[in-house]
Structures are given as C-alpha cells and as structure tokens.
Image (cartoon, rainbow, N blue to C red; front, side):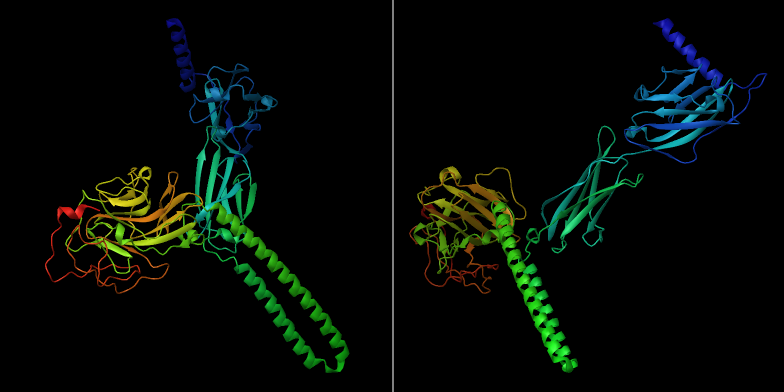
Length: 561
C-alpha cells in the first residue's frame, strides 16, 4: 500500500513538473487553441459535441488533449498517448463521453457527451499540450429540456375571486410562466414558486387569483427561454365559482342584448318608412322578413336564456351541495337554515341571573358579578327536535368575562357545579382563562374573540356549527353523535360584567337599549325580573345604567340553580 501511494504521488508530481516547467533548451512548435465563439445548445437526453481546434492546423494525434470543468482535475475526457485515459475522469462522465477522432490529423478534436443531463450545463475548458508547450480555450454548453404540459386546476375561493394553480414538471433551465385571458391580455400579478429535483430539473407552481367573473377561459403557458418552445393549457371558470356572484348576470346580459336588437330593428323600420314611401310594397315585404328574423332571434335568445338559466341553477345546486359541510362563509349557510326566534325560559334560569322583560337577554343581577367557581345558566324556551335552524347571540364585554353558549339536551343535569361536554349533553363554545375555544378544552383557541356568534343547528346531518357573524368565519363544529330527544339553546355566565343578547332575526341592532332593573341577588328571587328590560335586538355595546339605591350582597343561597 505504501509503495502504491508513493508511486501515485510521484506520477502526479511528474505531471505538474511537465506542465509548469519553462523550456530549457530546444523549442516546441507553438500553436493557439480556438473554441466555439457562441454557446453550444444541447437537449436533455440527447448527444452533443464540444469541439476545439488548433491554429495553425497540425496533427494533434500525439498531443495530450483534455476537456475539464472549472478545475484542471475535474476531467471530462483525457486523451494521452493516443488513447483515452479513465483514471482521472469524473465519475459522472464515465461511460458517457468519447473522443471524435475523424479530424485529429487536421488539428480538430471534439468530445461527444452522450445522454446529456442538467448538470452538464455550464463552462468547459479544452486543453492541448505538446511537449512542454500548451494552450487552452473556453466554451459554454447550454442544456435545455422541455418538461410536461402545464396542469391547471381550481383550488377554491380567494378573497373576492377564484384561486387557480398551474404546475409543470421536468423543465430546464427555469422556464418562463405567463397567464393570459381569453382576449390575449396578460395577467401581470401572480405568485410563482419553483423547486429542483435530484436531477436538477425544475418544477414550477404559479398561482393566479381571477377576480373578474366574466373572464371565462384563462390560459397558463410555460416557455423554455433557450429553445423557444412553449406548452400551454386553458381552463374555464364558471361564474358560480366566484363568491357572491349573481347567477342572473349572464341571463340579464342576454335579455339586454335582445332588447338592443329589437330597438335597433325598430329604428331601422322607422328610417325605412320615411325614406322609401315610393316603394311601399317592397318595403312592406322587407319589413315582414325583418319581423320574422327578429322573432326568430328573440325566440333563440329566450331559448338560450332558459338553457343557460337551467345550467346555472344546476351548477349552483351542485356547488352548494359540495359546500354544505364547508367551514366557510356563514352567509351561505343561512340560505339553507331557518331563523329560530329564541326566548329565554325564566323557570330554567339560575337565581343569580337577571332576564330582560322580552326574555332575549341575560346578565348578572346588579349586586352579583358571578364567581369563577360557579356555573350560572339559563335555557331557551323553545325545544328543537328536527330540521335546520340558527340564531345569533351578541356578547357584551366578551374579552373581560367568562361565558358560554350553544345547545344542550333537555334532560341535562345543571344542579351545583357541572361539566359542559358532549358526553354530558352540552355542545358549547366558551370564554375561559382569557381564551376562546370549545368545551371541553382541546388546546385550540380563536383570535380575535368574537363579539357576535351564530349557532347553526343541523339535525338532518347531525351537527352544530358556530360562526363569527362579524366576519363570517367558521369557529367550531361538533357532531351530535350522542344527541337524542329535544335540544334547547343554552346560555351560561360565570364571571365579569357580561351579558348575552339574542339577536332579533337578521335585522340591524336596536340603538337604544333599556336597562335591567337593579335587583339584589337571592336564591329566592325568580330568574326573570319585572319592570323595564332592554330590547331583543343586537348591538348593545354600552354599560347598563346602575341603580341609585344600595345593592344587596350575594348570599350563599344564590349559587343554587
């Protein structure tokens, strides 16, 4: 082993001495090495030649010829002693290169690279040496490959438009991506990401948000900048895919077009009547033909409108069916849910709670602010056994208090301290420990804390969902696997200056709420309070007026339901 290493070292030292030594007597014939003046283009998977020649022309069969990359030791091919040398050749070029010897006697040599790969792209140097004299020249190889045709698909709604993604695989070098509308107009704003695989080929993902419902077709094109070859794919975006788009828009445009045609026909008729009185018979025949043509156009337009409307209705039904269980856009769910008018049941209210006269709001009695160790709840008066319904609840001081709302079974146990969970017959969201989430806590919480919550109860599909009605976003959903019998709206307060107000349908908030009566907290007092209460509408933001008379403290008996 030591002799082998010593011999290899001596061989390398000898090569270096021959390469860098100065002439010491005698002279070698001088020459100049010339490479291609322009980059050489190669296609992935094909073969390519990297030629070099000497000037003046001379026989190079007995010269040392070498093609290498950035370093002299990174040999692509070595020709020495009239044969190819494999010892110093880079591993990735072994078996893929050969020397073209057809014109060696004329001073021209070339290395042929088979099965061109992406990593072959870049700069090369050809090196010619005869004796102690050598010269070299540089050349550039540009590798290009056309990958797969782009695949375009719709991924879903995005803000006020539809998000479309274009993906293409196996391109080199990085291709140019362009989105175009049906009219040929280019989209200038879109996002693009790229990645390279183990072979160095590019995968491109380009995302476009289309905001114009009338765009129709959009086309994604991918261009190889070296070869100039392009592949493209178009996709049609139906109008119902756009958020809050009207399915009647196209029908309205068709009707408007028909009306314009009829108006133009009428104007044409009047003009012909005034200018062709002498040709009355011919004009009458012409007008008769025009009327028939207008009638045919109108009938075809009406038929097209009916067909288009039927298609739009079908698309809408399919789209809504596919989004029935989607956790987006509370306004969409309202179309399939019946508004439930909820009133609070005084008989079910904890004695520490005060209800408004119209039984739509609940808060603590003025002398009581609750306790973190207590559970004070009230139920809705209306029992729910079937169908799909929803109601909305507005929370005052939602961030600085503890509360919960949702649904529960009629037969749940609410005496003393109890746990709210689906296993116990409660499906609720709550504000607890300064976070908002579902009960029991699962580690997931929502920011910001909602000020108005919509409860969507679907007994057909067996689930209940909660939405932030301020921005329409989805909060939580529960399956009603353990639900049986009658369900009731559920409202619970624990601590803080908080009130829960059931909103009056889909109307706006009442601007001037009336105050609760100032009554003491006592286990003997009923859950609802006589006297004046505040309105059942939503939007109660201010503090309730306080009483001028002193308040009685909460006794221990006030903690019983």
